[in-house]
Length: 431
Image 1: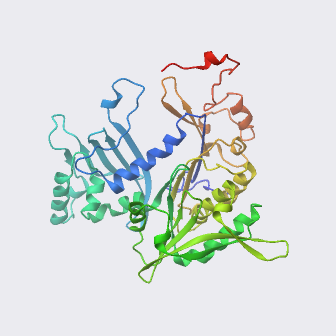
Image 2: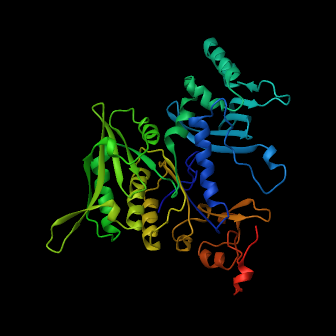
């Protein structure tokens, strides 16, 4: 299974798949939520009278008054070629304390802008390094400085720049808007973008995957329904549909009542369909089933199929962050799904999958390389600590890492105490 070829050059050596294990309450869900929060600040931004929404660390005195720092290295199609950028910002509950964008280059890095809050609470200090270069038109330089001066203390400059159409930063902003997808099993609704031209092929792929997974499903189909019948509150519906601006664009939706829907923008109109599955009865006739009649495992695979279809696309650049990838699925099904995914990796792949899991069957070097296996552990003071299996230098390529993990050789193992038997009165907790 080829993922990254030896000798591949920057940025092709970036990991394309990462699996994250950890005990309960080790921070796995918070790990995925961080990406959602970053995306929210960049894409949605903050209102003038609102706080940043930052949740401070609660197990250390004074942490609420300190900024939380976020830093991402992202690969962006910038001016027709792959370039890597490091975007970093810090926030307290009230304001942005720092922000910077740097292009990571083979020889010398290029800074686009830096920003820091003033110590006396005055205007933020900006350095617009790129705009001060030779050859930048005076009007662009002036516009950038006006935007910097007008950026509110609780707003990211990257959001403000795109809100005011600073074209140079558009590829960076669109990475957060279009390429980053964060999925949590607790979400009431989630939406995956797709295109009408891929609809038939995607439906065929989903049917094939459900059939091969021994779910009993032979195929899937979409039945037209009125748009107003979708079981969604009006604000949520408007927010989801506001992204459907390009002709032929669409979304796949999941609702809490078990139904799955597709919505496409066709000939200027929004067209909604409900997904149904088909099985064969004892006489060989096709019988339709509502998705509400399917098992949790079948629905989980149904939800994941469009994602893995997109990951295999040679033109896609999506980055999927998934909490509990294996939820409700048999270990052998999860393994088969991941092995099929890994077989599509190549030096030209620009999609990325990062997921958390409890499934110990996945922790094997027959599926993942050591640098693709990561461990989270709750530290002595409640903080989350991160390690990569590649950090352990004595792990041979043929070592049974699952056995070593369960024996406590690595981090991320729950430190259980005997539960024992207690009298009912002893089990009571006074609050």
